Image (cartoon, one colour):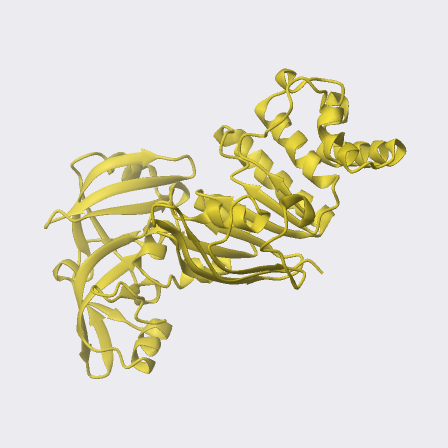
Length: 373
């Protein structure tokens, strides 16, 4: 077993700045958990406390049921991969990977077996005799991962390991980390500011802001049922459209009236509002760009002016503004557009949009909490 449990963990620096507040989380054996959030939210600090690189101000951290607050990093049986690789430039790839094993006095034949096995898994066998300066960024990151792999640790900690790579290489390495996880079958705790990495890698995601946990859930849960406005805006690209409107209840049916257009909240969302006994009144309405659709002029269509048309390959990102100058983003798959419609989508063109009740998200404008939580 390689579970990790954090109970009321807090980090306070000397100037009384609280970096992490009452962090409670249990990471199950062989689970891949991702900490995600903007810079300064406390995610890397939390990871470093698990590793023993930062002292804990309050609370306890357990690995495999053992409290490790006072254990040195080397005694916690964890392996860490850093953002900057932290390779020794004067050593070969082989010696970099073998370094920690030699410190542990592991026999050379076992070191050779572990290093060559890790190199084969990571596809760096041909580079074992090279120095780090002769490698690309992606190859260096594989070496850093290999150095962690050979330790046979209970827990893998990864602190923004892909942030120094270009977009194409990041996508490739992301896929390789997924494959690596399948081969190692161990517990991973991964830190990133990139919500795409979080969504594609994590079994569960821990979304943080200002040192507080905002939501913990599977990628599907945080995408489909964000707990508050921060999570709704952070998860998803482009981010969720949000605007103020009124929620009304007429003859047992809820309606919203964005930009003067009356739209029913039917199906599961309407039933959920009824089950929560949601009060009519002012709400913040959220609709993801992929759930906004182009429409013909009519009573259920919102009139907009097209400001920017971004061609993204398989889809268009249409930046539009309504008559009251509220700006929205619409994602339109190009396969759905005929040539004539596409030619009309130019800056300044009048377009009409709409969306259905089943894709709407409702937030309290004062507390920012999701009304359906």
